Amino acid sequence: MGGFYDLSVPDTSPEETIAALEETWSATAQALESLHPDAWDRDTDCPGWTVRDHVSHMIGTELSLLGTAAPSAPDPMPEHVRNPIGASNEAWIEARRGVPGTEVLAEFVEVTQKRLGELRAMPAERWEVPGWSPIGEAPYGEFMQIRIMDSWVHGQDIRWAIDRPGDRGGRGEAVALRRLTSGMGFVVGRQVGPPEGTTVVFDIEGPLARELAIGVEGKRANVLDGAPASPTVRLRMPAEHFVRLACGREDPEAVLDAGDVGVEGDAELGRKIVRSMNFMI
Image (cartoon, rainbow, N blue to C red; front, side):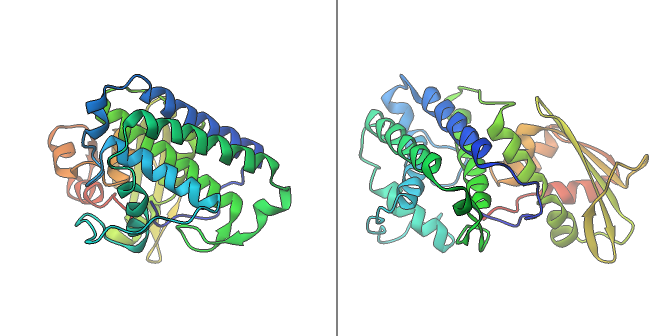
């Protein structure tokens, strides 16, 4: 996963980052326990990926960070792969497509425990060192925040597919919402481009409900300190739809037609924003 983020989001301590990763990985592992063998091959809303593939992707990313070389990439590359990061992911996934789900789960638990041990042993200054990340060069601690978001979203992908809801309201969702809301200025300002003076309010409902107000000024869309009394458009949606729309997991037209997103004010602009919310690559 990757996309456009505001790197000025508040810093988080290494201890809190590690706790969030542990909570998120543990919750996903628990959701996969006693899963029927056929369910591992169930398609998810992430194009081209099954439940097993999501777990394999997370294993591969953490193995890479542990220094393990990637297996050979599949040839030909599947049609759903659209960029180099996707191609890298697919190598780890392809290597596990024939592996029983119980073995994939056991490897996931083993690898994530190794990563947690590595992170706990890491000196504090290492977290500040810039290096590669899916959003470009960033401090290692920032990269690990992205790992929290990525892991939590893929955990939800799995839960939606196997109908085992959970891991809501915790550290993983908090990080995911913080980072995904940071991309809404890009969505409004760059992907939609409404006229100067436009104000947009996102009302995100759920255990970690929040209100995000964005104003367009000087051809830039910036987060406002508070929501105006009468914004140009107000969008109300449950957090699960916000996440799924921002990550390209569901059809915006279907969500709008079903009334799962409420649009108040400029209906045409509101619908255009909802159609443009996917900013992940």
